[in-house]
Image (cartoon, rainbow, N blue to C red; front, side):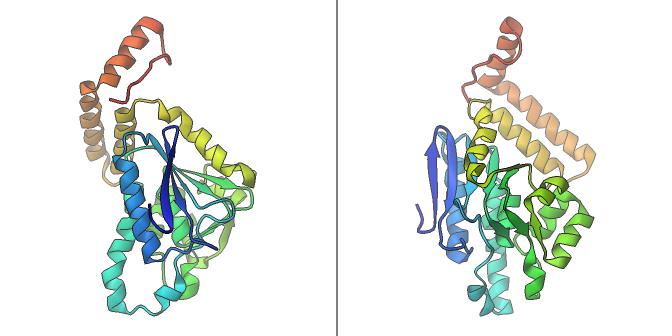
Length: 259
């Protein structure tokens, strides 16, 4: 457990909880603790799905600008790779993930939310990539993940302007997947993940890998990735359980073991 980030596990769901008052500014220490929590969530067998959560008031309002202001070009050359890779560690958690977004998710906070499979936002949430207002661009995946999620033109609008996107617009453009009252954000995130906790863990892992890796390549290569992962699942106990249950009892009644 880090000073600012911790992994809390309850009922098969791990919560990566950011806790750096007041705004969860993502300084170097927080970035590295996010990496550590994501790696722990990846390795733990009792974690079947993951929520990234900044608390009831704010998700994360971006990088620690005071820390960044004094960094030179060579400082950032050294640091930028680690910054990106700390967030990529979240994106690579081989389990279903959801960002539970309350309040501001700006700059690095928005980029962190983009690393999750799904995003649940409170009605008053504000998301955006305001780095342009500081004379820079998003540097932790915002130009790439945002464009893949909402399309290049919408991503350029958000990035070029630096404007804040409210929850309703975010839902309309596909930046978030669900909007709920502010006080229901965390429980809605848990509800979204609950069906996966007892699901076939290796099939879910394979599905996530096939989609994510396939988006990075051409169709023929993506189909080959899918084929290999599909065939590999025939070595799992859950494939045997699922197909036997279907034949004997019909669909939707399998009791998977996660192996």
